Length: 209
Picture (cartoon, rainbow, N blue to C red):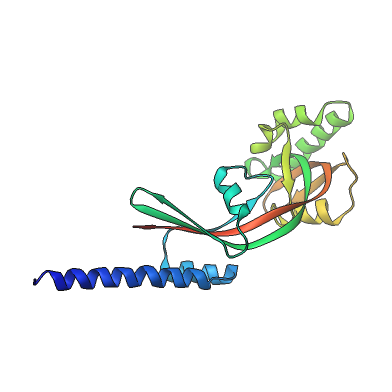
């Protein structure tokens, strides 16, 4: 009998904790609310994610896109439970680009620009942009023949935004971007016009059951 009271108290407190967590989760209505929640609770794997309907094709992403704003999904694996809550849904304009990135961190800004000018000269002399990207680009675009996929404003850098989005470039136009602050120098081709793409902001965190 002496063990029953502590056990019942533990079960009651555990149940209260779970209910309290659910109430807190239900009260989250914005990204700021989510950040406050994560800071207060510090749950395992706690983070805000952005899912893009063109880039994320997993079953989980498909399930989350079916939810309305405020909708929740819970996944149980072993002794852990992962919560997903859709904080926001939006349609965001994207453009498609290919680019060749020359990294000034490995040499100097001047050297990076000289290399880029030589690549541009090869392109103007008839070399395919995809072949040049494969052989000269730093980072992931070397593996994709330059294709950077659908990009929105704010995704790469302010310098990229000013040249690629604010200025007018026609389809298949090739232009330079100098991101001096990050020592990155681009040769960019716009490959597709504006496309509205659905995005969702999702709060994710894991806790032990």
